[in-house]
Image (cartoon, rainbow, N blue to C red; front, side, top):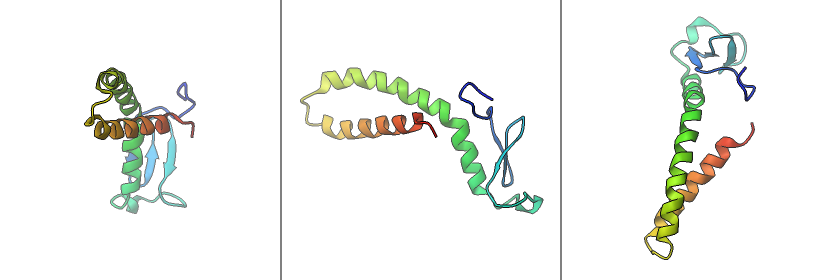
Length: 102
């Protein structure tokens, strides 16, 4: 397990079975995994992409947020900032959600 008590990454999708190097993490179909599910598991691939990219995306948004905080202080009162501010607030909300415990 990692420091956050999660299964080590990277995770891999083998059909509908999601695995790490050490164990099976989950299946995206109920019951026992079968080899004939190999081509019909976009959910497994989506879960694996999300899990494997999570830490990098959080780190990138944290870095952008530090930059945007400086820009925000320089742009207050600028009417064009309202549009940009909505996008920044959405990114901050997404970052907060990504950091919430499961």
